[in-house]
Length: 481
Image (cartoon, rainbow, N blue to C red; front, side, top):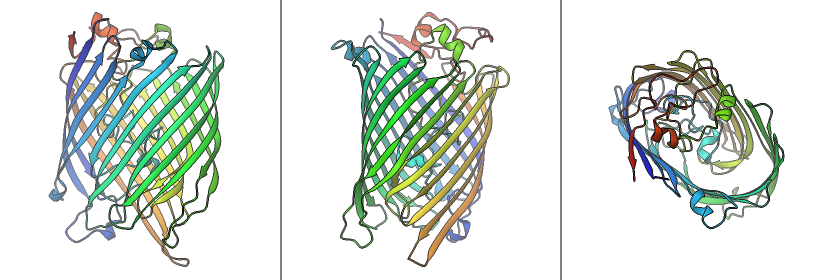
């Protein structure tokens, strides 16, 4: 197999109206600050994918250069980085029983995050409808506007114990660091480091059913970014899991069990916590109208399919075939660290749902929603976010129009008889234009095909009944070694 490398530079320009750029109640803003603002953002980005005899990988790096009209002091340049390596073929040179070996990582510097991570529907993954939790910041807890560094790193390996049973193990590290706050606000925020190890056994008991168990241990270390001391806590959880392929389009997975929080000893009054036990569970459902066509055609993953998503980064595949429909729903209940107003373990319920529909060959509609409820011994929060948008291919340019709405409320017990409430709502409207310099198919779902189709110049696999598009697949800058 010849080594191949694809390089696709992209450039996006967006105009955004934001009713509350500070993510805080307007009554709390300092003098001279305006909650409403208009902003212009330029996003240059480099996307790279490589396939070799032993290693596959993809990488993207981009900048978010943003200028504000009403609050020019908020101008900033953010950074988004994502990468992944698939080392399975290299590992198979030692043992053919190794079923997976991969490394993934992301880094982001930004003054604001939605609280639910990246979505796959919007052009920049900045809407709502996320169905995965990769770090504590994806659980729905929203902070005021503050510069922050968010880093994730993970390693996953799999080993075939038998023909139908696989042992999977993983380690992930997350780091969240806060900097300067804006708008005259100075809330108590906590830098958070997290270490998580996971071991799972899965057995395929029928062509459509897989069952198994998962054991997870997480350790979080927190320190006051704006004062307030430091601490740490550890959780251990176990779940039983069942995944079912109901049809070639519909799949579900269920997981349920318990999570144990180890006791925390502290010399600070009120900071000691006894050991606690709580149920934990996850539910996911995915429906894709064109899954059958992809499976029958034996579609291989595209060069960027496994690249981790980062909010604000331009991702491929924003436009799907006419008549195609995808939707995902997830629910997660577990314990994650609180990092705003107070630290320590917080029980969190997170719901996510999203849908994408191909209206014409060039127009795709998107919608999404996230809801989260979290509570600890001294605080609780509720977050609701909704998104509606559309993506349209105007020649080689992707035009994306997105409307986002967010409501956040937080109750904090100041004493046994006093309680403080903190709530706000905001809306955003964004119009963006994006261009991929060396690939005419970067924005089409499945348009990047696989490395095999990149080499041969064959057209990408399309959903059953839609027919192949005219012309060959744009493959970016393709280098063979």
